[in-house]
Length: 156
Image (cartoon, rainbow, N blue to C red; front, side, top):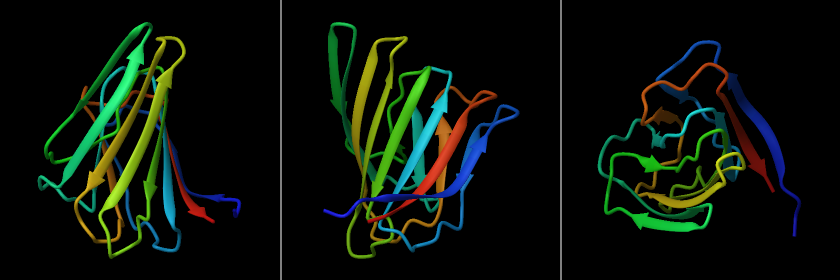
């Protein structure tokens, strides 16, 4: 099995609060993308690809906090849900993002040791276009100062 290599495409640390984070002009030269989001609020983080605001997204999620277990799903939505557990890190894998013969799958893992929370989300973007832009929004409004967003292309 080949060893994957992460190629840094973008890295942003907010010096002022911002409601929307945009990654644009994403090259189609990699197989997968990895997006790492770190911030200090406990709210949902949403993705949109290529400015698609149609009901083309769906997801299923599961997780737990302390001794409780939770899960859920949705039918269709106007964004991909990535989960969030505050004061932690959200690791988002976007598989085959440059393929034009399949829908896009997104796996997200997030957690916070301080809050004893873990969550996993599987999302689908029902579109066969290559992903060239990613928009992140936060259910609470602004991402706070110090939030970090790192985008990597994966070579295998």
